[in-house]
Image: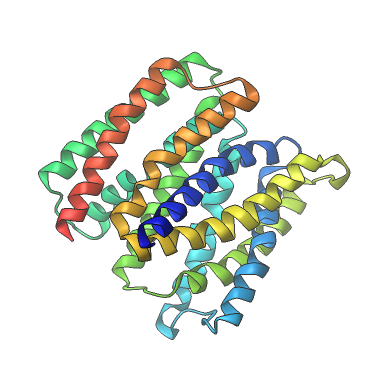
Length: 293
């Protein structure tokens, strides 16, 4: 029964993460990126706060960590999630998902710099393979498409790096709050900040929002922002960090396939082939981290 539960959770997380990239693309078709991200968090936060209250989970970080809770609001939620959806105004959802799948690579780099971890030979090998493969994918896709793709690529890479830095800082500070505490209030305040910022900076016209775009932001908030996150951390709890992290190898395949099926567009064949060594590099990093534990 435990294995069935783990399999179901793994499948749900892969499907959720794989489909959110296409949802972001649909959302920004008629909704400006900052405002869309704010809407996403506004939709998600009531559910997160309600679940926290029902389970009697604290909404605020421990007293010594409350400034860091504000940092999480801005640098884990507001800025990187805006960069993600902004990036999708320039690059395909498939390429965006491939870039974001390198999160374990970014976390390793951040851990070396901020936690002064000494990487093992297997980690260095995985890091080199992953970085070379990702560079090949990015250069080929940028060359094959309009020059403006670089804006989206830089935004997405920045989002990954910022997330990795906050993750390592959380680890450095021994911030072991529950997933609900970590997400609920920072998500809510990020939603307020981004909605207000989007209103004044982007001047969104609600009358121009299409139904698919509005439903996509709802999907991103409720399914991606609540269901997906809770399922992922439950998967971690039941299967361990290593097995849960294998999600990063699977969800880009779903994102690429879905975009090809719906829009008839996919990253080039060469880029698809390069995802294999990229996945091998990421897997080597994950395996070496498992051995270390």
